[in-house]
Amino acid sequence: MSHFQYQNGVLHAEGVALPAIAEQFGSPTYVYSKAALLENFRSYADACTGRDALVCYAMKANSNLAILDLLAREGAGFDIVSGGELLRVIAAGGDPGKTIFSGVGKTVEEMKLALEKGILCFNVESIPELHRLNEVAGSMGKRAPVSLRVNPNVDAKTHPYIATGLKANKFGVAFDDALATYRTAASLPHLDVVGIDCHIGSQLLDDAPLLEALDKLIELIDTLAADGVNLHHLDIGGGLGVNYGAEGDKPPVPVGDYLGRLFARIDAWRLDKHDGKPIKVIFEPGRSIVADTGVLLTKIEFLKPGVEKNFAIVDAAMNDLMRPTLYQAWMGVQPVVPREGEQLTYDVVGPVCESGDWLARERDLAVEPGDLLAIMTAGAYGMTMASNYNTRGRAAEVIVDGDGVHVIRQRENPADLFALETMLK
Ligand code: LLP
Image (cartoon, rainbow, N blue to C red; front, side, top):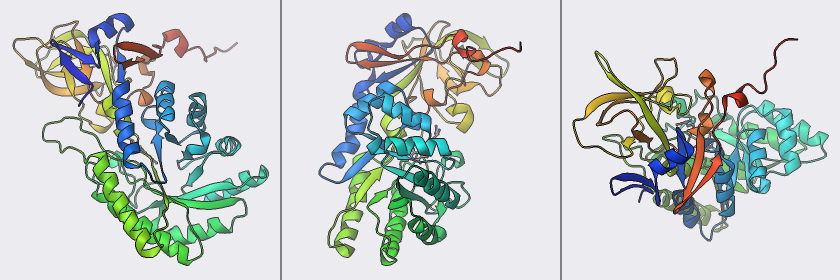
């Protein structure tokens, strides 16, 4: 059940009416539901009960400290892609020992920081990265735990910008080169080869490509074992999609079903080839943990009838929510207090000076200036991808817990935006 529902004709987040939030905190504001967040995380955690499994939340989806803290308290680990994200994990009370570090371009400084803090594993994406990590670890008198991100060349059947497991992508080590790359890794004195990982893409509605990728990892793990490289964990990445609600959209496979099928395959393989000895399994979900926990609350400033189109100009813009313009993503738009009366077809656009500044296109709405709209399913890759384009302060973020509202990030002031800048003397 969604935690964003109409009660007496007014859209609520849990027990709180969204107009009350707009009145108190202004708009645009990201509004999250704590119950939704916990429910989503627990759908992973419950499916992992009794197993050696770790859910490393891909915090690029939403890295607010309050969100990280709530997930850390539930036992989550984290998937990071920068030193900055590691500092966030620590600031939020997360455990570096449950943190894995993904990404193709880790700097020397980032590697040092991660080694100092004792992360669980580096997900390495290339041979030059292996050599750099080996040197950095050696210079610190440490050994770096390493997993190789293997590119299984599986078609994830998603938007090309968010498909990552094909040969043409910059990510990972090609499947055919994996064995040689593992041999290189195993030969380096300051690396401990501990795992294998992949991430084939995002917003996957079907788990078939994920299970196909799993089969390829399994094959490789056995080939490596025959070659004397024994891995302790298998990380299948993230990628499970959510329902954005566009007409005709297929609902995503439920988390529990996907994990059930995945564990069944792993168990059968371990029984068949490894005397039933389990292997640790890691997941890196982002979107499926946070997307439907948040909405972007925005106010209509003006209605502008046009020759070809009608525009609803709102106070949120592409800098607040990049997904529509960047991926032509369809996001649901709901009037916070729906009106009776004739609907017109609107493009919902922001005040930024770009034709690409749109949040939704061709939506039938009965609205007036001053009305509030909720852009739905905006909890993932919303605030984390926001920018200050046009010197617009980023939106406030609040989290609703039952009848209570907590500010988890204040709205930015314009003065904050140029505070780091200096003029020539
Ligand atoms: N692990 C790795 C290595 C990743 O690159 C990603 C996402 C994830 C895990 C989490 O994937 P998820 O479970 O969220 O699908 N900004 C785009 C999505 C980019 C995803 C990038 N990588 C969007 O708004 O659709």
